[in-house]
Image (cartoon, rainbow, N blue to C red; front, side, top):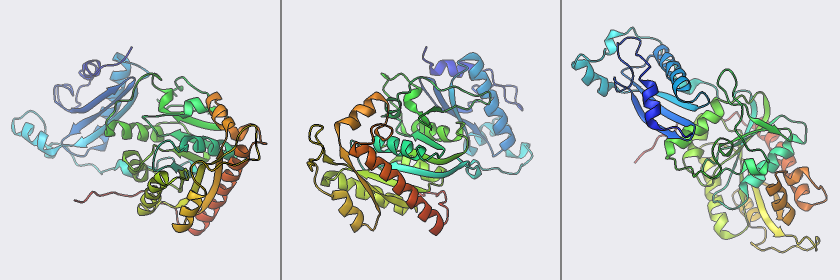
Length: 384
């Protein structure tokens, strides 16, 4: 049964403030409550920074929701300092002010290491949708796993998750006793997607904050373990999720996927520019659907979307060209069947090209790690 906001608010009336004889709802400390299926996110407003109290209130809220609403709910609880709100309440004698409590050493959440057990974090991105980015991400992850490496695959496309179908793995992941999600594992790849957590027929009608909260939770509250590579399948464009990622994790590098026609190349150019602007190394570009190979004429090549468009753009932008992937019927069939083509018939051009792509990415990562310093998370400031 779907969770609603009233259920959550009722559960939170059982959470009493440690210093006040009132619950958090009565004290008007709960803000920005959003509920979608089994996902719940909200903010606890506080009068000042108090890491010990923040942690305690978060735990109490989580316990209450799991007890009174759903023990398997996926939670994203944040805290915020709202001085003006509580100053007004303090004047009325309704809430203790900042001077009431002993100052404690501040511990910023931003200092926590995210995905610290992952050696290389690779973002697979595209400027526009429909260019086969997820197909490239899945086959790249499986291609890396073919080498014996420990690989993770995270689908950050909240609105249009494709990985459950491409990996033939539906159903909710398990949860540890520490309330962490356990990724599914198949073909030597550990993976997680929003598509595994919600009804496949349910539209994801979420605003930006809910989406970015879910992505952060996938990185912070999942038992990924030690990995050689983490492949992030990004949504198309240069929006909220892309900015959240570069602010949250130190990306080792980005792979840009495009088809050869000009309308796709225009957006791919913006994708390259975005990563360069935030100091994330671009490992290179991939030309997907480079040419069509008829199943009954495997020696024929038809350049339906143009010829060498991505290759030429990569050269103009001073970026590596990682390879071209042909358009073959077996790629579509293998994706629909949930077995990536790179794990199938190695006589197909597509399988061979995906193996070549994986090897090229490994090579570019080695060069990048030898010649450049580790990427740092960035602080993006919006200026008018």
